[in-house]
Image (cartoon, rainbow, N blue to C red; front, side, top):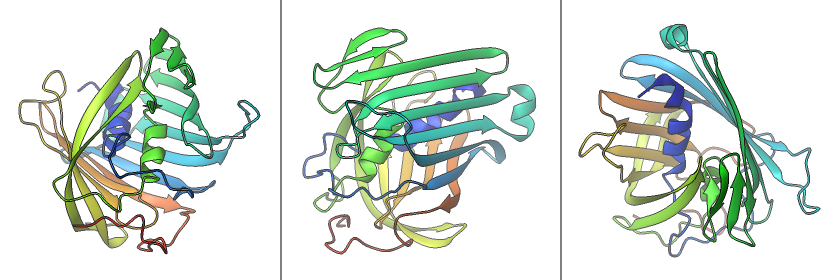
Length: 269
């Protein structure tokens, strides 16, 4: 995989651990995140650190249809020896409704070596169309962008999801809508820089081609608590493997390991 595609690919990888069309998975009234939350990640290719990224939630300076949205921000940059080969400094912003968590606007600022690109995607959910830098495209009822899908998914009620169940969703990126199917593998306790954490484990399907080899495996771990924070992702690619790990967090809405009082966010094994 080219280094310039690494950041957005790994954001997409984490986003793909959830379902927008999941049966028995409705959005919760109160999102499991708050303004001020910040998550920091390290990307590794084999034994090498290759990139770092942050995702945070801010109060938006913009309004859409007289609604004050959340502003979701993701930044990524190459580090160490990779930065000497290709310097990547990318930023992605998504402005989402505070009630439905659907996006009003997605923007990107891509800085990869001497290459620069600024793009946008404006979502018209009423008319089921997205207007972007590359044109206008039809979308489904719940199609989100690659960043808002993660926060939307964290807000789903997984109370009735069963081990081995497969669920599907779609998200829009560039000029395409991408379908993904994932399987819930149950709960697993993993070691992290913050101690052992109980997580929900997922395995999304991958498509053989430029990035994945035949029978490539992808696994994702998300905290099985009230915060639903992605803590790890692993995926096999054409040459080697990629891994993403949470290295720091700030201003989580709930203490790590806590559960929502009504139990709606607990998954069953």
